[in-house]
Length: 72
View 1 (cartoon, rainbow, N blue to C red):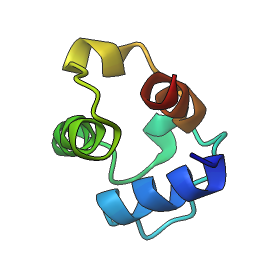
View 2: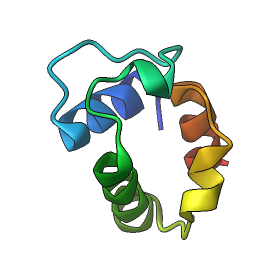
View 3: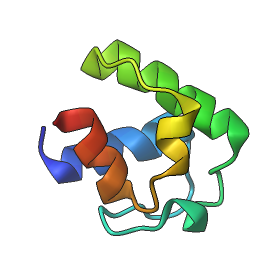
View 4: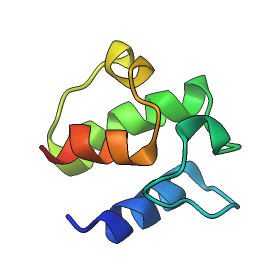
């Protein structure tokens, strides 16, 4: 999956009003909270057929880290 498509998918999934790029820090996304983390877990399973856990997300700092986790 192309990184720009991933950032669009993430933005749509989180219903983000701001701009999200591959280099955006997760903490800089206004919608990034515990509920968003749960939504990302569901996204990983549904779109990427990957089972990830909250502990996996705690080690990530950027959208690129999340992209790499889901696409590797």
